[in-house]
Length: 355
Image 1 (cartoon, rainbow, N blue to C red):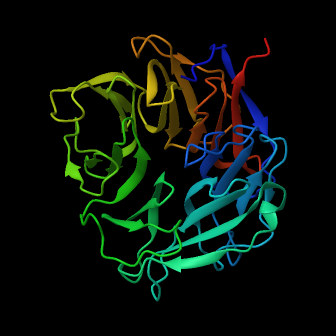
Image 2: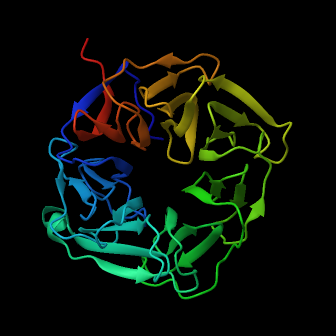
């Protein structure tokens, strides 16, 4: 177990040094993909992706000191006017991190595409990117989700399909392991070697034992499922529209879902994270990140009683959150990214209150 003492949270403002909106964020924990090698500075390596400025090239942002300084990679993965969406990062050797990102802008002459860069932590920002086509995708497709499940299992969500790489993202040679029609929004590793995939029109998929055999599960409503996570006790939490839901039957039925909280008009649940427990999450601690689609302020809520009540974390100025990543070992640490505010893409740190 890695559960920690929860301290009343606040949001700190970090300098992104980025003029465009920030789309996704990933942390490198001290638990490597192989679960045999570690990194003494848990959650100090943070990677985030951005939109491209008109006629310019989108950046991948990196911090190697826990958010104290963000800088763009020296090299860029994609061409001008191509936004970058999902991101995954993890140790692939005892001292090297590989970062993988997906192109989020249609290129009519090209298939869906990821890019990867690998280096030791001190030299990561200068690493060279290698682009990889998802060869069985369709020209004009984009990558909407990445899920790095095991060292040799990287899944990419492209439109309604899921593709598999077994070599750290260096190739996607085969046909889709799942073919669908509803766009995929997120792929995550759940508890007990379960893989969850969510998307549009109430799409929820589950694969067991880290397989690529996906079964279609039941959502409480046919909305856009933006996020999902699983607790150690098997409960499943999903954000659909403005509501955070909990399923007590592994999303096996509509009746098994319960609405915990409706966050209101123009709100969208973008991310949900549970407390820090190694195999799944602590179901008593729930953090929910909210976007505001009416150009209002994004927000973070926390429950420490399993979703019976939620308290809003004091806000910092922003115009909406797009993603968040929370520590898997420290209940008091997380990073949120969002739209442009005061001329810069937003990065906020979820941290213990100083009051």
